[in-house]
Image 1 (cartoon, rainbow, N blue to C red):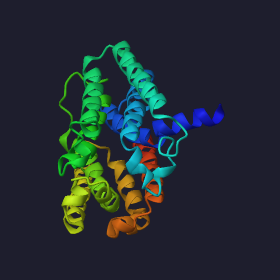
Image 2 (image 1 turned 90 degrees about the vertical axis):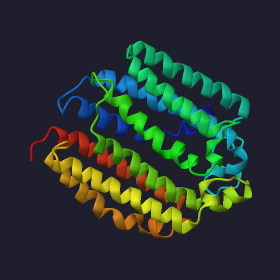
Image 3 (image 1 turned 135 degrees about the vertical axis):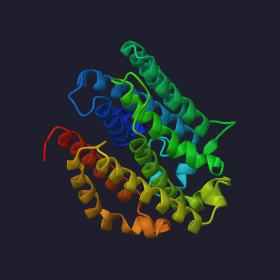
Length: 291
């Protein structure tokens, strides 16, 4: 029983919830101008958007990627490709999670939040499911897989406390671009597998050089957007400490950035999520500390 529960939890990808939590925190803090807000409402909304909605969507993605994941050195150990959970059980599980997510969204009684949930669900269905399967199509795989979702994760936090959609553009750009740039590098590391699966994806269609240059551009401009947000007063001046701390971690990413084909996917994933978790902890703490 314990192993089965653990396998279903793996399907939900708990580490990935950090992205939803972090983007929603940015949105919520900015919506209230870094003043205290109702954490009960926020956490309820996060449960809907993170563990439930994205837990279900990741499960659907794993259902469609079983054959591809069997070829991957890291993903082959996931519950579906390893045979720990059957495809039919995973389908029922995914449906239950997504229905529960929208149930909580309706309970919160915020139409804009429900729209954000719907937008993420629709985008992920287009990315994952036939006949669309945007993950197999050049350019669209990058946009759908890494640009659209950060946008709506941010606004899922923003709309909980803001009476409008007028969010600061530099912050929105930072969250979208840093995900966008990182996803480019990840797709390079998947090139051989996607060629075997006969995908017409960006990793297959574009050269490594093109993808690396594009990645560097978006990561660099994301950093500039974060710096600009501090300089213009969108973020507190204390957030310079977050910039310095992130730069200090750069050497740990060096191989993944310069030689993405040789990326240790498991190490880079864990590093990235630990880094983002630390960043969000700093964002919350420094928001209310005057330095």
